[in-house]
Length: 564
Image (cartoon, rainbow, N blue to C red; front, side, top):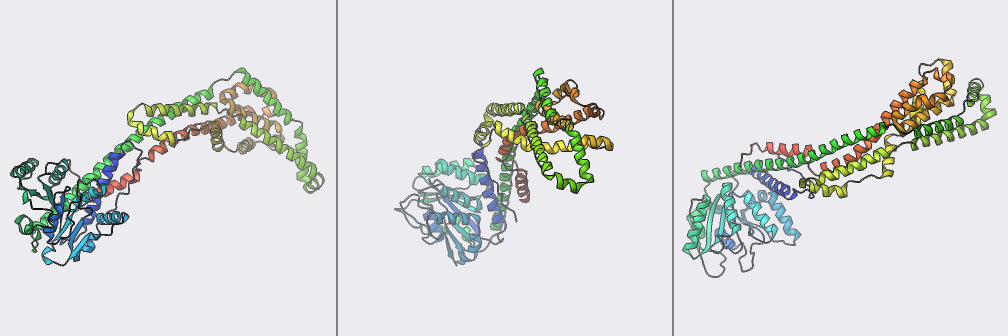
């Protein structure tokens, strides 16, 4: 069993009216084909009377039904809802039609409780389901929709007009549609009293390609409920012949094949239109990604810029500040404490617990303060400028082509533009754990050292200060600044025993790793801003899974749509 499409099209798209019309048409055809393709081969012919307001369609329906079923009167439109005459044996299948369910739900929503189906037991009428459809030129949209729905599932159309309305544009469109569709169509001029009008109607039908003469029903007085003897006329009588003709089977099979092919064509047209929208969104997304690439490269260039000599002075002052805090004189005390702890762990815990705890708390506070300073050293101006430029360039891009006017309006309310505080928060999320990073680098430096060097290194607050200053320099000025200050500013403050450990090479390697993560975080912020646009745009059209499902449904109809 085929599934329905389940496609939702965003109403904000500029092409929404066209896309929605294609979607509704495809879904209605699909629903009609699914229902009709599962009917029993012996299911009756569906004969629908269609016509405009005041053409006497309901009178003809009653005449063919041989019963006053449909309302007739001066009120226009008279046929406010369909009337269906069907044998009681086929009523359950008839009620399973999706259009019937939609119609009854719409009627109930307006408080209407009228019975749409009139069931009968007449064997002479068992081969036909007779439908009096709402006027196709009604001002009520639901009436026109019902008329169109029954047109899709009909096997035979009885097109009813009058000499006053045969030249109306609405009637011309419906008659042309019936002929283009290839439906078996009986054209009736009702209320006829003018030979000239009848002959002109016949001429117009021939111009459309309909060779058979239209049926003429002469005008009668007032508003009759029915016209005696109409059903016995040869053009109508053949529809109600109890014996099932080969022609009837052929007609139904041809109509089902036609419905199937048109369903496939409508699905293909919808798929092509949606693919066009997908390509349009993909184009703007690619353009945005190109902007991101250009802008992040420009941002990287700004990060590589050599800073002024004032920056070196600030680094020197900051390093001196850190070394004063983590003075080398602390090393012996830390080493003695560690040694005592290893040898006399219990005694040290008992004797020095209060002093040690206070000192460690003070050290933790110092570390926390300097970690915060390292974070505060980050220069976010380049990424703030990059994000602002990206937003400006995307706005210019969307305004450069009228084809993107709808997207320009949508992003105005859907895409947030980040300010400085939001960018800072995004950076913190993207590059968290400076303390953990420094601890990891500390452990990396220890690898491969001798025991004596490791003891020195572990107890040295100088190393901690060097790691801190390296991070601050890199996130605040980049590798260019780090290279500039390593030899001129940092080396003079490093004890010889630390220099012997090739600490300069280590710091340079650390700087490269920090710089890589720092730049990745900054680029990620620009990319996230761009992603806000792309996500909004991609949500306007069906995703790839939706397009694949549509294509599968079309393929499951079993035919390829022919060119029209």
